[in-house]
Image (tube, rainbow, N blue to C red; front, side, top):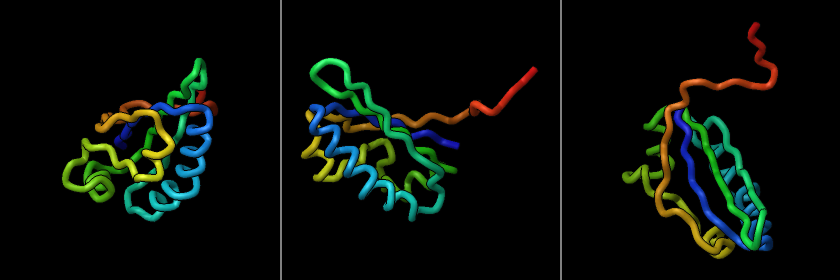
Length: 108
């Protein structure tokens, strides 16, 4: 599994708008793509900015390329998202997930 990680920042109001865009537009698009496994939007609203972190999970790098195109390291940021943000990373990082655990995983 590959994790694709992107970050941005917004005002509190902009973070609300971005969250609505993410849940109403981005997630439905992603759910239609082969190889998409899931996503998380994380927010840190301390201070005068809200820092956003988006992690999407993919089966393979080929699945990421079907989403991102010929430059998989380039961030895919739609105009509606840009309008909600103060700034954002223009690139993403990809990480091979080597260990994954849930709260229900128990080892003794």
